[in-house]
Image (tube, rainbow over all chains, first blue to last red; front, side):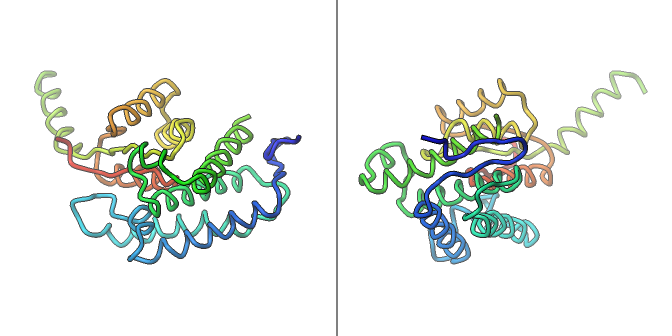
Length: 143
Length: 93
């Protein structure tokens, strides 16, 4: 069985099934949409103020953070069918997976290890899938 | 000016200029390996320091990962957020 991500020179070869790529791309689209919707827990988790004593970041910081979130998720959506990635794109995939994982955590109100451990089997599987993707990408990128 | 006086002035200026901290908060879904990697990358810390801070976050729920001026603290905080890590800034206690 081949590794899902492996380094060859300065490229990361991606060997994951189409269904998983589509599942991840859909999750990225949903995360991008929810991040901009101020009524969602995802918005607060990904774009809540960095100084909790104020209601909003300053406009420049707000814009920068929004662009970062959209940039990483957008880059993943654009490249999700690619068979090999540049190092920069692989790094964006790690960011995108982390953003999806954080949105998942916010949606499921995971605050403690106990919350995490009480996830349904299906949700637990989704979380492990994202964590494994991050771990394997780091391993390939840092090898 | 004496060396003592210079030192005292420098220390006072530093205190005035360095009132902000970057706090990294624990979250139960981010992998320890990811957190260590991001801390190393963002702050250019060595592995030992990044691992110590990560384990402090893991065991105590939070850690002051950097302190200094507000502008830089904000920039570091934004960099941590680009990996969806829970980070905030606050005035030094």
